[in-house]
Image (cartoon, rainbow, N blue to C red):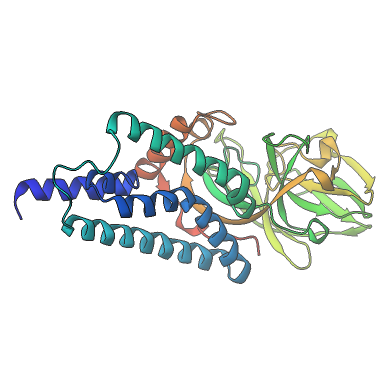
Length: 347
């Protein structure tokens, strides 16, 4: 194989890897171009549907492994068909595609818009990939995590301890979503008290006058968990009977707004709290949320990077696609990977 063919084949592989099915256009392969064109539109939605199916039957870590296997398999097939295309005899001197100057931009604009619409309408219902730009749910969902939430669940089956997203206005299709943990269920009586501990204060939760079990684990002093790097954090295990998880309390922290919470939930209300208890607002401040405000349920963590709070928020609350791509590339190549958080599923 001469240098010219090597360069041609390499170009086709790279184009199909990053701009499917541009490699088949480059190779003048009409059949594979029109097969992989629609498949590339559905790729993101296929990933979302598979993530949902895998999670339904398996744990978060097994689901993540199976997704990686599928992505590798998909790209191996793409590489194989690109290689087969390079071996095909193409018609010489005959135009098999429209002129590139208008066909390529129109084709990829159509692919991009179609993929976005199908992902938003269908794919995100199964599994929506979200970035965590704040430390609301530390130490369980960390700053810099990419996590899957699903919109397919039974709202009547929301359990205590579930991690959910909710909107202030449920009628806003693209409104801002907040991540919280469900503590109180409809009809229950919830009370929260600030009580003295050996280092300061801790929030004690009572559900129908029964205290939620909390056990002190250790002191945590880590800039990744405390942006100021000055105040120590204290790690507690909270036990909600069927599920145990860790929460963070701060040293010498006292907030009078949290001191006396005593509320009876209505039949469509949930009491939600953050896991990083002393840095963010939750139902202790703004009261319970309604069932119709709940927009998603946590599935599992896909990626986890140890990044700064400034880096996580550089694209704003929504951010542009270009900014998000730049941030993701920076995280992938330059930030520390947190392997122990991959596949966390809150089970």
